[in-house]
Image 1: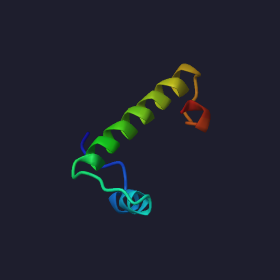
Image 2: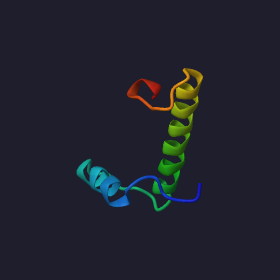
Image 3: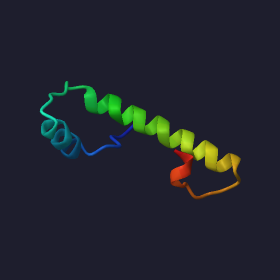
Amino acid sequence: MAEMLVVGSKVRAVVKKSKMNMSGDFLKGLSKEVEAIVKKAVARAKANKRKTLRPTDL
């Protein structure tokens, strides 16, 4: 993973609103999870012979 796939300030705002804290490496872990989800969606779309990702691919 070369770049962050999540907006840190937005995630922090959600966490703060929930009255929780997050560790310094949480965003990196979250970004890895997002990347895995996107890759899985891409594989599903390709298996269905589509080039467009849809919510159902999630």
